[in-house]
Length: 339
Ligand code: AQP
Image (tube, rainbow, N blue to C red; front, side, top):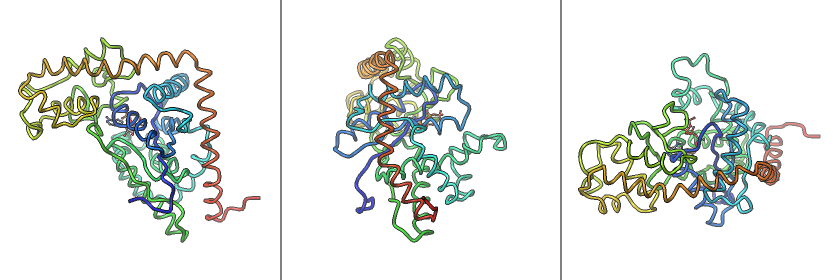
């Protein structure tokens, strides 16, 4: 349970670091739209400051930020109901992150799986920002006193670190100022896997485009990628237990369940004994039916970039109304003089 003394508030972010993919949609965007409609204030952010922890071409970053905003709206986020903005327009994120850089310990950062994966064998050459990434993520969340964060499973460890930072801050300063934020990781597709290797997650940064379905893919590309997705030679099992040790088969069944808003058991029951060739054909039809309207709407929204920029600016103003007083109180707790 999250702290009762904090008003329920949802925050989540996505990096504008490349094409949005099916994992981002099912693990994050689709669930953001669901959360928005539960009457809790939801704050959604294009985390451009996170994106530059690895090199981003400036023109591509600008385009990706606008396209991500279009992706949020096309997926059902209403910028009037929710708060939608890009991180760099709300300086309180980076300001609180500095305080958290001084609260978090080096050892905590070095243990993060994402740091290990992305810095690889040459950690000396990785940016300092990549190491500090989880402190900025904690600031993104806690500068709004967010109580719930819908994310994919890959972000679980960072959410645990956010709680560690909040707990250490509260303990060090003898306050109960930051909430213990709850990750919300639920549904059939909290970890959508790579279409060519069911043991790796679907990711923006995989060099091969065949490994993911992008939200900008047209119907032909979606169908082609699903039909070429790796599977094993066996037919679909009679029960969900039969998906064990079959990562590619499980992934396609999970994707079907999440797109159709049903359960894995239901999908298996509907398709028991079917060969994957037929299953993939039906899955491709379902994916096109669900995703084509989103890519069409994104393309339409991208034609009016001034409107996208206006939405981001207005969202940033609304975000600052919440973030500025929380940062000011943090500075007071820490003992900074504010004249
Ligand atoms: N494969 C996935 N399955 C389910 N959810 C996923 N998310 C990402 N990949 C999957 C969720 O999408 C949200 C935003 O992710 P992000 O872009 O901020 O972070 P990321 O994990 O860095 O995304 P990528 O695509 O994996 O980028 P790279 O390749 O740069 O690492 C988060 O809620 C995340 O859980």
